[in-house]
Length: 354
Ligand code: NAD
Ligand code: DAU
Image (tube, rainbow, N blue to C red):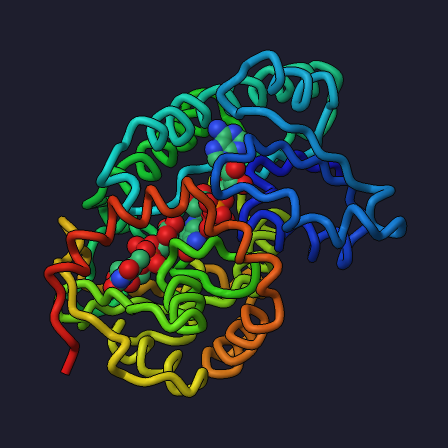
């Protein structure tokens, strides 16, 4: 297959590219805007390996740019578009949602339009239509106090981030219903692993602890997330691309539902750092208490987890310890400006977590 991977320089996208190139004979082109979260260094091992780079290309561009997208989808005659591109951090969406909507709604629309044009051209010549995979999130369900979400549940997003992701999904569904596009949607759980930008809680708490900085735990710390290793997430998206039913929506659950306070305890214990680093800070606005998903639909097409949470977390911590030259340069002036905006007042008013 020839696949356009949008947002392939980010955390999950780059893992998908690495694993797909290794596991298949596919040709992959990455399109990435290289926002603060996109990082060419995430792909440097691939670019430096001739056995992989021969089937790989990189284009710096925006999914909301119709000229670039037309070239990469229609002219390139791809077999599939896999869209990871998004603004992905909930806290930033609370500070300013504009970019979330531009990429998550306008950008998705431009990708869908190009895919529709290609599908029409292929159908005219009797060829298989291109597949369109939209990488989405469990956050579209909103908070789930008990039980687990199934794919037919009502969407109830609570943050500007998850609202933009839900809007993107609805557009995808509309192109399925109206134009018969071969679409797929994945809803992944909270993902952790190597190459994750340090704003997210797992890498933030690891890199802060390694620097002897405070760990800002929001509110009572009893919010629950179900942790999914990035290799499992990337492989599940591959299974959906290869075997998903046209029009299908697939949950990708994790293997480690935990309260944030217990996740924090596990990180500090493995790093042998003191609990006194943990500060209770003002909660995130609209903070969802819990996410949990049922994964039987994905299991039915042959996917199961490979990475257990305890081992996955230990490996991730070891990776951040060993790859300081990857994360240190990310703590630049832009990072400091964001960190001050998000945490300065919170930390000034914080109390130690007992
Ligand atoms: P990330 O922020 O690490 O990567 C996003 C990538 O998209 C970056 O490389 C960025 O430069 C690129 N990008 C952003 N806007 C773009 C645009 N307009 N055009 C082209 N490229 C653009 O995010 P991630 O954690 O790897 O998440 C990838 C996808 O998976 C997102 O759609 C996210 O909503 C979804 N998701 C993430 C998680 C998680 O826990 N991280 C869980 C479920 C779903
Ligand atoms: O559930 C899937 C989602 O997981 C993805 O769609 C998002 O792209 C991804 O960012 C992630 O969203 P979360 O908001 O759950 O992840 P985050 O790492 O920001 O926060 C995880 C939990 O930790 C959440 O309950 C908030 C809490 N937290 C987070 C940060 C950054 C803190 O207590 N302190 C913090 O400083």
